[in-house]
Length: 314
Image (cartoon, rainbow, N blue to C red; front, side, top):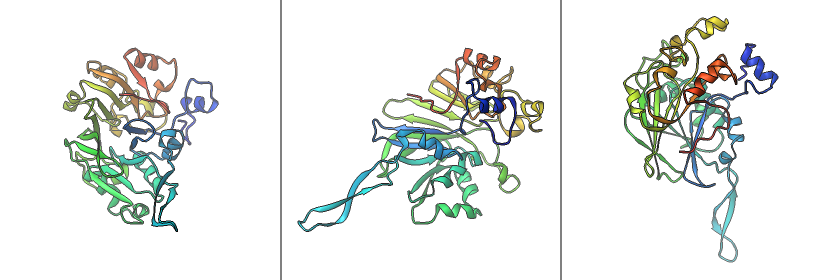
C-alpha cells in the first residue's frame, strides 16, 4: 500500500499522506523465539518486501560475533575472527507457494544458509522445474528443507539444530494452487495451510491463517488461541469488479470476505481468542481507512488491522 500501478482512492490517500491510509509493506511476520537480544527468529513467509522489513526491525539485524580462526598464534593462543554475517533469522516457514509469500526468498540468497519449512506440495512447486531456484542452491546446505506434514507438530530449531521449544503444526485451509501452477500441478490439501504455533513452556498458541477461502471444521481448532492472524484481503465479495480493478470476486481468488452476514467478521464472532488481527489486506479494502465505517465495525468487534511494526506479545 500503495500499489505501484493503482490510483484507487486508498492508494492515492496513502501517497498523499495525512494519516487516514497508512502505507504498508506486503504481509509478513517475524516470529521471535527466546528472550533478549540473543533470541532466534523465524520468518513466516518471505514477501518481496522482506529486505525492507528486516531493515525496519532492529531485532532482525545481523550481529557481530567472534569465532575460532582454527589456528594458534605465536604464543600458542587460539586466534579469533569476527563474523560479519551472523543473522538471527534461523528459518522461513511457508504457508503456501504464492509469489507474494515466496519471492523474498531470492532476496535472502547471499551466503547464509536457509532452513525452509514447507509442505511437500509447496516445496515441489517451488523447486521442480524452476531454474530460478538454483540461486538458492549455490553451495551445499544453502537451502535445507524441513517438511510440514499436515497435523504433525514440527520443532523450530536453533542454529545448532536443537529444538527451541516452539512447534509449528500445519493444517489445511481451503485455498488453491498458486496462479503460476494452475493447470500445471494437481491441487492438494498441502497447497495452502494455516500454522498453529505453540510454545511448549507456556502453552501459548498463535494461529496464523492469512489466506482462507472459507471457514470449516478447522475453526474449532482456533478456539482458545491467544492470538489469531486472519485473512483480511477483501471487505466484500465484489470489491474488485465494483471498483473497476478487476473481474474476479473474492471467492474466485480463494479469499473469504470480511464484511457481510457470511463474512469472517460475523462468522468468527463466537470464536474465543485473545487478540484477533486482520492481515494480508488488499489495497482496495476500505477497512484500511482510519475512521471509515468498515474500520469502526472491525474495531467494535474486537479486531485489529495489521500495520507495519505491529508487535504481538504472547
